[in-house]
Image (tube, rainbow, N blue to C red; front, side, top):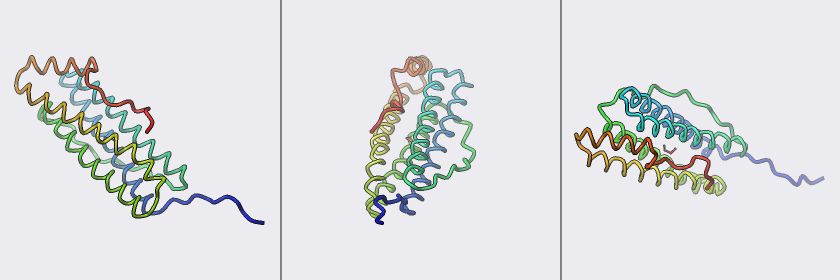
Length: 180
Ligand code: OFO
């Protein structure tokens, strides 16, 4: 008798790269949580609200990968996460570090795209396009915020308005439940 179904087995190189990305997204969530907590302690309520939401979004990115790996016949590894930086020199330091971190994540996503193409894993390649667009948005958002912070300089009134803007969500992280 001929078996008409084929068991999906994930390419091991792609699986390893996806697990590496799971770790990066988990760390992003933890890092932004540390930033949120720092901002809350500084009385920057809008900034902390924004960062708590950003942390949640990164956790969603991690979960989306975990489910994809398991559904495609791989094994998602839930990583230990290193201690993130918990103290910052000010709001400019926070958002510069956030932007720098996003650039590292973008490099990692691009590498993942490369591996998918090398291994001819077009399903994962398609799946990962959602992350490619997400990184574009997140980098643009972090740059916009940094531009605003540079304009504010040492102006305390400007900082107050900036924080209030974030609290009223005039600047938002993207909807984590959106599909590709
Ligand atoms: Fe997961 O998007 Fe930022 O890091």
